[in-house]
Length: 92
Image (tube, rainbow, N blue to C red; front, top):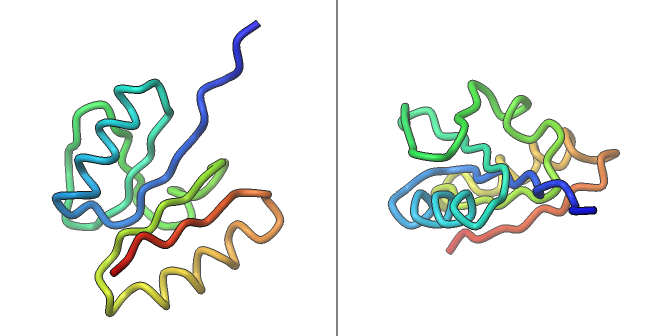
């Protein structure tokens, strides 16, 4: 019996985060991306909101701008508080 693919959310889809999201999808993960400026990313489903992006996530990877990092972490923490999801801040 195989385990279901992990659902990984990538917040902020700059160039390096796009590469990460695509590689995770190619490796078999169910990847959801969220970035208002990105409309299409091969192999990655794009969410319309932060809440939609993190809903059901096993892991949330944040790679937003430094100016957005703290607010994104605060908002995401409230959304995933009872879910058991892991939040990873990859921001500089």
